[in-house]
Image 1 (cartoon, one colour):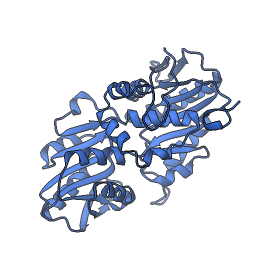
Image 2 (cartoon, rainbow, N blue to C red):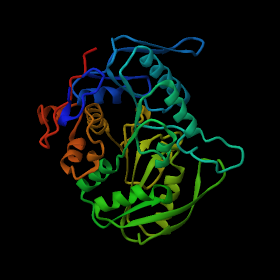
Image 3 (spheres, rainbow, N blue to C red):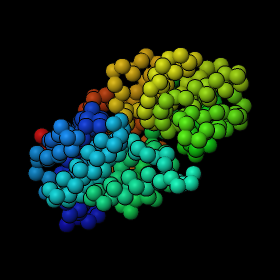
Length: 361
């Protein structure tokens, strides 16, 4: 039996199902809506003794299961929910389990940069693998080398195209893209998409303190509109330091964007008190109502993740998402709770067939 494009058909059932824990159910709902269904049914709750319990309410035998669970706040509970859900699906005889982890916690602990410290990013990878995941789908890891911590396939998506398209549509002129050395490779791609020069910020982090000191700005930024780009914004301490450094260099206007809006306290207060024109993040991490301020713009990654899920299920190229599909990045910006997907019709213009139906709960 052959599948799409003459390839050998997968052994698991021809339906895929999307499930989620408690970390970001709204994102899971949007992803499921994009692919034409709704999330599967599962109970995930915590007993009075803080033990987590999971029960799957659907038959998933030989099904292709995608489990959406970013490891965001509360981080350790989200991780345990993910691991226990993977184990539950494995024992329920799911055909394949893909852990969809839009935000990968402990990503900064990816090396021994001090004596007698752990490499926690590797530990989390081992735990996900041992729990029974067959592959991982994630978004903008803190360092791409974290993929190598896994002994199972990893697909790493990036929000660079989505974020750059947002700023292209704003038609800002005389821009310069600003980043630090850690995100320089992705930022260079961001700058190329905007046809803007790249400036690098040299910073120094003080021990384990959650702040950094900006030492130097390398590049011509005076009189330009700056767009600061990074993988995540946590307490916004580094972001504000970079903003102040750019102001000292004579930048006319400052925007900022990042894939992951962690926004730990006092990030919102710092952004409110700054001269930042706008901060753009994605919904890899849910944003509580008290942190939804006018200066903060949230873009949904649901179409990107949904398209990747469809391609993984069919055995198609995920890397093709990062090609010259300008129309798809525009569609991602216009999409809201399935509106653009519905208007697109059953098949994409580029020949990619619509998703196999996700089963109703």
